[in-house]
Image (cartoon, rainbow, N blue to C red):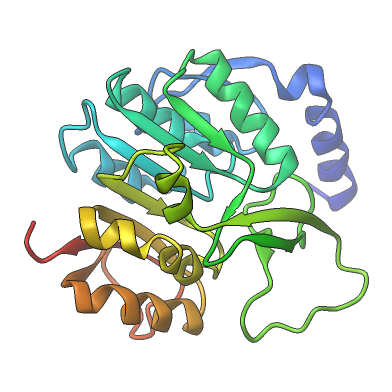
Length: 254
């Protein structure tokens, strides 16, 4: 299929009345949930990150648990774990990208998950605002805050997004301390951890984290290894530098 035809099909599928057609998630952590047709059909087909989804299904008894989902995107894990924790639990879903946030809220509404609370903010180590850089268009999972070693080039599309430390949201009573945290924030994870380290130290949640840069790896190790967290790759073949891989981080006492 040539590029012109492929792009034409995508434009048709992206029309709101087609993109938002109702479908059910076929399998995986959110199996049976109400979803939307396009884009990211891998979500409802159940083929997105199968190793991660399989791990989560058997990780713990989710009933009543508190979950933080950092980098929620369309809400696959927020919806899937929200259905599992039930109304006695809570999920806090963080997604700063406005288009992705709108789709996240639609999926939460379709599944009547009143105990899943969406936040259009980026978890960080300070309060403020920053540019969320958009490199691959709408609905991309690669939108990110500026990497520590990245040069900001003029002309790169961006959104201005709010930053908040999650310790502050806990102090304000807006979110519960977590039993489980999922972090996939394209290189900013160590900053998000730093802004939540007081809560993490006190409650020692299990953490699932995707690592994307040397700074993110080093910062995560510096914060969590002194607390006894052990890095377990979700699937075999993890590179020595940990970049590009998902890790389950458990405190040693668990």
